[in-house]
Amino acid sequence: MSDEKKLAIIATKGSLDWAYPPFILASTAAALGYETEIFFTFYGLALLKKKLNLQVTSLGNPAMPMPMPVPVMLQTLPGMQAMMSSMMKKKMKSKGVASVEELRELCIEADVRMVACQMTVDLFDFDTKDLIDEVEYAGAASFFEFAGDADICLYI
Amino acid sequence: MPDFNQELDASGLNCPLPILRAKKTLKGMESGQVLRIIATDPGSVKDFDAFANQTGNELIEASEEGGKYIFFIKKK
Image 1 (cartoon, helix red, strand yellow):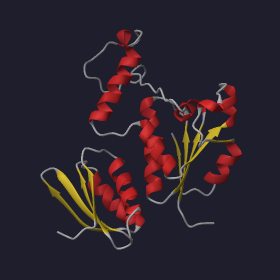
Image 2 (cartoon, chains in turn yellow, blue):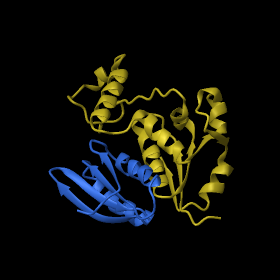
Image 3 (cartoon, helix red, strand yellow):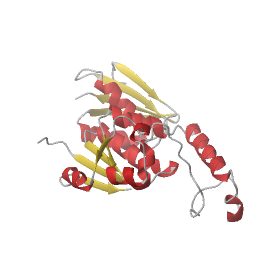
């Protein structure tokens, strides 16, 4: 048993914006010497795909800053989500914000454990071949084994 | 200005990249050696202080110069 601090995160969301908190916090915690595990469940599983295609949407999110006001009716048009996602990625790049791929890679380099919820993998018929090789598959009991003596536990 | 053994230019990078790059660079250095870091992220001022406090690496000096933040960190 080490005296290392531990951080346990549950990642439940699979959009581009919500991909950031788990990977930023996990990579930083690892850099600070925390032993870190992220448990990916439900839509969070999308963050484990080898080929990420994460999107943002302003629908149902009135707080999202927009370059100009766009009426909700127009936000529902085909192609709007893809356009907003590409604008968001450009903006992040121009501000020196890391890509999700880069942050995930940094987490892996720093030995952050990535655990996929086996139940959700089955539920959504995910093919494990589509997920990155570093993923371990487990369930709620295994999460508690780690989180039970974690110093910090976050549900994102 | 303190002497330093290595330099890391984290200009233009945003949280948490300056910290992660610093950590990575320090990993390849010897105990007692000093890393000079240049950053433009204003959040890095508090972050490098917190990084030093939590990792035991010593923040010898932190300064600002024309929108750039300079840190000297001595490896534990």
